[in-house]
Image (cartoon, rainbow, N blue to C red; front, side):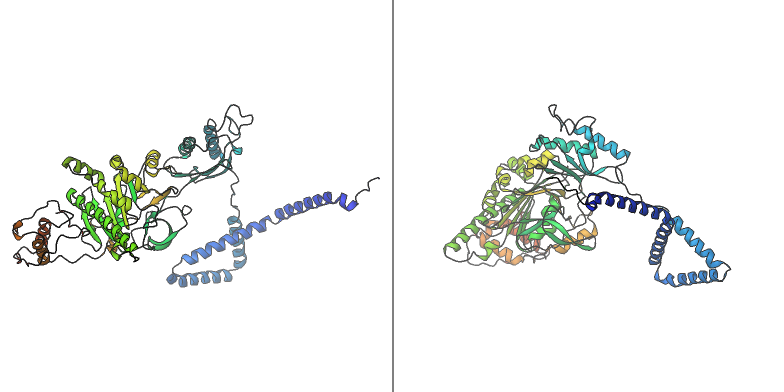
Length: 578
């Protein structure tokens, strides 16, 4: 059967449509050429109107009346002058044509300098992304770089801010060493001094390099919107976490992405370890944690450096002790170990009896230990046990007893940390400038960014358990007693400090000393700083407190003899040394 020819309208339709499109395009180009002067004048009039509105908005209100009067006078003069309106119209059209002659230049591709930079980067990646047996290599010397680089963005200085790279499937992107070589090369070729983020897509064989903006340093210590058991360690990138908290930064309120650390019986990371360089902000981090913990719990601070960085917390409500010496540190940590055991026993007995846990076992206890390596060195020289050995019970059983341990150390003394501290501190923070190897040794995983050699205090990385490595900026919490602290930061920290406890009554302290030991055990005017026992409160330390609180001219009060109450309970706080 012979095929019937298609109708004429169907066979020639496509040609007619193409011819119509060509005619319409030609007509549009001709109309654009004819109307080009009108388009130019219209564009200039819009620019002149926008300029006039901007100047009027910038004019102060008290000067708008005289300005309006001056413009009206000029219009009146032009209207009265012969041929004045025509001359004004010609002048306006000329100014509009001159103003609208410049069209915005749309950049459609990289310039010569940017092309040279992309070619150099492409040639540098050839040895890493090519093999001799590849029949059609994506990366080859003298090849086309446009096929490997999908997206690229440059800043005003001509440096790359974003680059998408397509690499061959046989590249070993699953090996950290291979990734590290590519990241180091891109960091060096794209410009040092900036922090780059590398996003590897193993399924699509794509690598996206982007420049990260600097984290804000304007957030100071303040009351964060959290529930008991949550602590804001710092702030990170917007796309790194799903939670934001309202903060006050630079006299404005904003929602900042926060790194929230959860503690308590259901926490998987009950203890924290912070490591950094000198001046990196580890002490500020501990101060920030202490200020957030005091409204809901008790804090015990042991400072190994002895620089008085925590003097603002001494004697505050909720602060059990601030120890700077070896004797006081050992006594306080020994008490903390006994307190952990007591809490466990009391909670276990309550559960066996079918009762809720006692109130004193549910109040969180925070143990903040700064620079334990120094105390360990002093203890070894004095033949005493390392204070870190006393942390075994709080670290192992602290989660069930509502006891949280935070340890801060510097990189030069990180090898002095005990195995128990390294094992049970699953929340980790690295502050200050550090190499990728140092960051990986602390966090257990290398960051997906390139650390910069110079960072502000409080800048670093955080990792909670087995989660991702996050950039971190600790809220500014300096020592308010330091002369170098700015006044806004000083007032911010002082506003968060609890009230000071009432002074210890000299008569009550002296009575406790007399009731604990015989009256003739020590002269009343003797002040000693011997180590106190955990089982009983020694008369030496109590006499020290009494002498410190009684005025110099007041005589020693007469002792008040009372029945012997026995030794102090194990969970009683230990008096501070000295």
